[in-house]
Image (tube, rainbow, N blue to C red; front, top):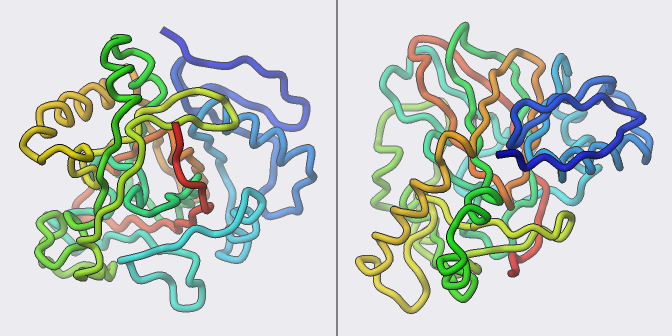
Length: 291
Ligand code: SIN
């Protein structure tokens, strides 16, 4: 099984991570001004591989913001306190003292899928990493859709899914609990709002259809109860994250990973208790999902 598109690159080197998705890109210094030709090739690699990884990039927040803006406007960051001098940047941090504490991003999800126009891309840059563990896993939602039966595909193409931020960010949040943590999570009534998106979305740059559901924010199908929706959502959540649809990024200080939030879910591993992990995260604004 392989889902890789085959393009030639003349300004960057692209090395696939798996036959399904993910690629390491080298031959580019993200602190320098990038030419239009280089940016166009990064966009091509992004479309081809969904998750792109740059190593040994030592960026200040200003550099990361400049890089982010090459791909669009900044996304809106709700429910998590951003860096005081950089409201576009979230510091994703878990301290060595946060033993047994739920980590930020530690469930399969697509970033902010409860927004009317969820981010197109997320860019995460590692500053400090544990000596082992703390990898991020990615699941390819094109593959999740394309490997369903035609009957299931047809059914889902006609359905909408209700998303809400209430599980992690609602007033009765069950996901993060009340443990003391370095990151400030904002729990509010607003997070209980609901909004629906198509269950399947087309990514304009590739023309491919991706399943657009995730276990954190997808609550139920529109016009159906949670109990009616649950068996189908459970099946789809398990199917989407099958090992053969995933890749895994091992972080080093200076690693920058950019993923396509429209066709990828991610899950941050929480297997490094006793060590500090710190990354800077920005998002690129997206459009309203459509089939
Ligand atoms: C996130 O969900 O954005 C965080 C991912 C990570 O820390 O690896």
